[in-house]
Length: 438
Figure 1 (cartoon, rainbow, N blue to C red):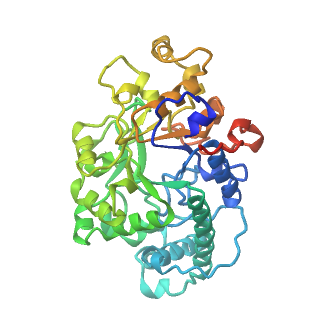
Figure 2: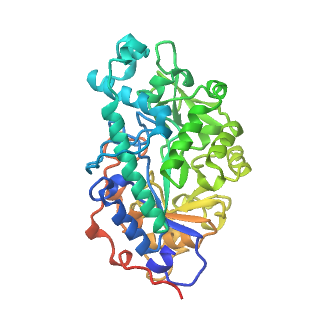
């Protein structure tokens, strides 16, 4: 296991699986070119899982969680891909729509689809026939060929890949343009309500995400095809899928489109079991899905997750916020059906979290620290010694970096998603191959 080799060779029981959280854009090159080298480092450090953020195109703030596509891979990788003959027939549901959207948006100088001329906005067949989709489709084919090689390399080395499925997508996206009936829009294609969350751990004012919300009845009427296609796509790319904001399947925070604050919202009922059953039918097994159930979560959401055998999430940073014995993130409360993290991409690094910690938090952490142990190593040890079936550690915490290496500050629109490491920063102990056990 990673921690027994890297940090704490104590012989204590460890999580069944362990891995590292690091997005592709955080690799030194910022692209796919160094993926195999990173996989080798994972193996050498004793890890068996690589979790990353969404591979879909980011928005103008570089966020991969507000993408113009629920399906397409970002074409911004700087690595040069060879021409590919990759068979894209499995991607036919979304590929042409994405290619048309890209080409029209380029011609329209970046305007969102709802500001295009009516014949394009409303997808007139004659208007769309004027556009060639070959260039964009070739980009996606080349990516898929390269990604298939990376995934095969990882799996052959015993590393599983975990991808991230953001539950919501941007209003200005190929999916909303192509499937307006599946979203809560008015006759002009404008959102009636937008997504967000009420005040929570991350932001006392809540978060105003601005993404469109689904018309769940329309999804049911079409047999959940959009969602089935989306999960199928994710499982062609990854071995496991983290469903971001799983709470939104149960109920979503709907903010009036004209409102500036997330506080002025209300909960809308979601599809609950009906959608989860569809996702599981595509996935084939609950072990392929992780439900991100963080934040202020009512018991009904946890029950929905458990009813379908899905793994949930625990974040140790949250376990030291109070003295509540029932806090689900406390080390002693973490269970086998969870994936435990020191922090996620939305948290500060553990060093940054500690540096800004009030005395009460420090006192709670100190009860767990061993002599000479840094706070990041303490939390990593707690994660891997917990009852969780899987432990995932952000690379920044293994490297013991401070807030300068934080990936995202929820509720802020600038300065996020830009952190990259240098190979010279990687501790030597992570680059020494694990000795095989006799």
